[in-house]
Length: 260
Image (cartoon, rainbow, N blue to C red; front, side, top):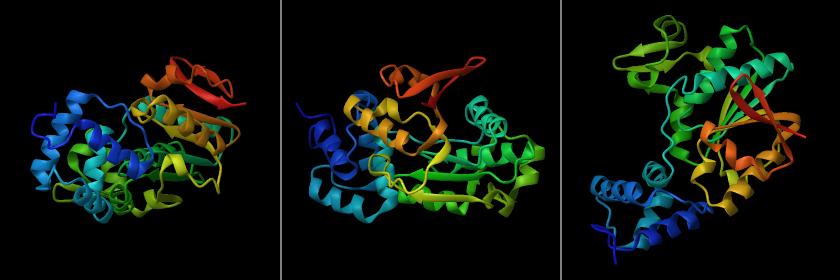
């Protein structure tokens, strides 16, 4: 039976996502179907023409980003799960580390949040890289312009210190862009030219099938330097139970992993 308001079975659209990204996902069917209906209403695209939809997704990054977020919502905001962001910078300082990777970085909120925390703690020589599958998201991250709602958790003093107010938006100052870079890449085809001391990969793996998840974790492992640290989302901790290549560590109530 076809999904309400959709011209094809829900699985057809998941298959298209897999074709475009290589990711086998396990989204909530009811929630994703509602998002799919809104996607077609908002874009005006024909839900019954898969080839036309595929061509549009390949040509228009903004539409592709909207399609991705039907299945893997990656909207973020500054200082999200701030305890884990502070953990990353604390490990960086304690172990005298230099490089951090945020993946997926969405529109750059996590990357710039890490940079603010590092600067506030006097760490100026850290290099932070953000990677996301969405070209549209990467363009937004490089620009660094955010609605005021994205900065709700940032104290006014830090807003004034690190952002330029432009009507209802905030633009990051150049000091936040120093030694910060963004790239469009797929976690499953990650080009491991560079390895990192700390990797934050939060709230992504839980949307993947077991096969895709294992492949993604191995890619993350390959991108980690010796004795590097991996910080996943809180709800993703149990997904690492069968990976003895990563050692579970704790600081207080915060759980993360170390490459062994």
